[in-house]
Image (spheres, rainbow, N blue to C red):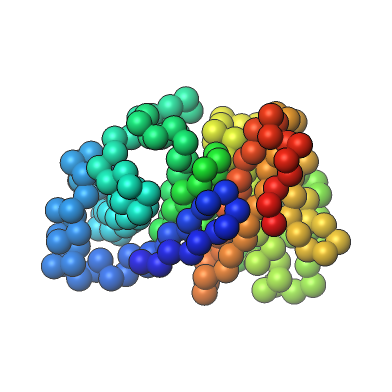
Length: 226
């Protein structure tokens, strides 16, 4: 388990390869350390692969809460199914996982994160679900490797943004478009609200990840810290 400190928004990013949980003794030792609610969620999965991912997510959540002095804090399910901390509304968090990688972000503003294993780009899916500019960015890459990386770059950015809004899958895909600027930086053109959104992007081996921070409009005059 690793922790990355992000100075912006007093944020911390946690990541874990759940391959270590393939050891049965390690799995059950950590299983006994997470909350009853997390254990029930783990038990609901049929396959060990999914149980390990759920346990890994629970471990990152527990570590993040502990680091913020909130060990054992109860989660409440909010609108659109996004959980939050009823006793600590000033702390926001989000979880994501893919294959064997689990990711969590904690911040003092609403945040969303997504991690994806880089595989072959699905251009048919991109043409159907991405905005025109997003599809052109992916399809216009010079080679297969570049297209694969561009596809999952857009994917993780879109997912992290949707989660940062709090709307998740209920957000209309045409309500926002990820835009890659001339210098390669990512931004978003959106009609969801008048908040400010900023991204952080990461590559962890064969995985691509993105974190999106949402600052409410009332703070827009302050700008984002670099």
